[in-house]
Length: 363
Image (cartoon, rainbow, N blue to C red; front, side, top):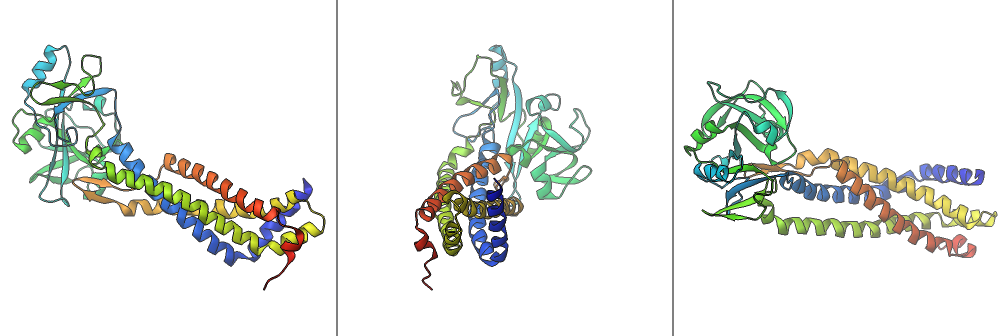
């Protein structure tokens, strides 16, 4: 045990002596980890924000992006649902604006019931109240950051001013929305009593995929059809993550082999003075693990810092990599697997060489 400790100390001291080489190898590993993390963060953000299915159903217009925007159905559908023994809650979901840059997602809700349907976290201000004499809005955290608005400020929604009473965070696409009382949303859009959808309980009366009269369809609440349009892009990003992970194996194998080659004479001398192959392997392993762990941590940290600057808003929705605990754990798992494969390959190549091969100089 003492001999292994000495070998580890020697390995770390040698890394400090060759710090320029270590920095170059570390940058190669760190950049690869950063790109893998950012790409995985993009895929993860779409899954979290647009595939957050809840134990409720929505009745919406068929062949639209439904819960997100585009659906419009008459209030009389609510009477039909009540006749089936359901308790429907109408909502309005629409995108307004003159261009993709200033587009805003508006969610019209029942002030008395929306908190139980979407149990958000109130970041600042207060909740919506029923029966207020002036237009009020609750902004999602992403939209609030984009507009630079907070409680007490005034924002323009479809050309009409509304007072911001609070900012909330839900973790779904609604973080890009301005939530207003449903009557205000209907007045802004000129919809009279029409709604975008009805939220109903998943009690067995209706099922996901049911088709109702009048061109209506039942879907799981929170599972937005918009994601299906992005399927090819998401598949491409997922494939890119897998290819980069495979490339990371090659990059690490190259980095670790270069590290071993630089130390071949040191490794040979250690063998000559009587250290076992295990001790020699420990010398190399300590350097490889320190190099990869530090470089991977720097790469993942850089991805976490860079991610917010990659935010882009299209059709009222801001997309950016979400580098959270899930993504970081996945990156750590992939990194551990990559390190194990690359390290095992390099160790086999080094330990199988004879002492003569290790100490032979060719420069």
